[in-house]
Amino acid sequence: MNNYLTIKDMPTEERPREKMVKYGPESLSTAELLALILRTGSQENTALDLANKLLTTCEGINCLVEYSIEELQEIKGIGLAKATQLKAVAELSKKLNIARRDLTKVHSPGEVAEILIPKIGYDHQEKFIVVVLDIKNQIIGISEISKGSLNSSIVHPREVFRYAIKKSAASIILAHNHPSGDLTPSLEDIDVTKRLFKVGKLVGIEVLDHLIIGKDKYNSLKAQNLF
Image (cartoon, rainbow, N blue to C red; front, side, top):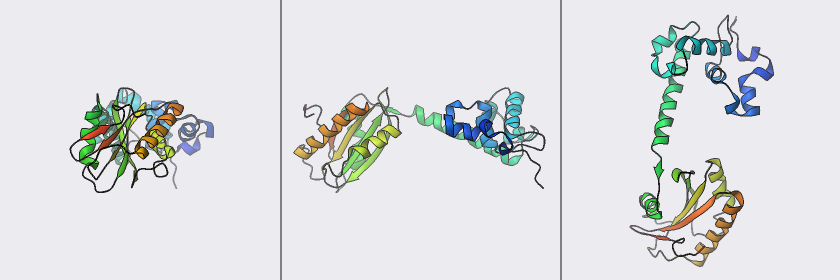
């Protein structure tokens, strides 16, 4: 018989999972977030009680990084499974921090082109890319939106801005390659750019540029005042 207390034993409105779904993850305390990781408590305590005990014993959340698996297991109610779960969360947190520090801040279209030329400059098929930037002009995402000749039916604003909104973008840079090597923008290139620029104004995500990428060079529609 399982006598362990779980979060399900708590009143519905006090359960961390339900609070997160209703109010968002930022509404949860550190103890409540830990309780979601721990999932179950012990015979004497709920997962939330155990989370509070962990924070008190360790004098804060830093113990997840500083304590070894063996040291975490010395806390009553924390077995091997829970200790490894907590260390996994700590390691993920470290990797996320490293990823944030490694964001590339761009100062010019040329810097973006340098990133994209190895990705699509040598492809034999046209690819349309959106580069997503945060408020500090750091690249926070690069996504391939479509393949094939550029036209308004393939490059739909919904697909472009869905990704940008998901990444909480402040601005975006559009890009596509010309396998022919001729980087002259077509009328379709210009039309699609103008369309996306207008949509960006409406949703509050500025389209900074549209780059045409070749094998070792690029062309900027913004520099030519084409939108």
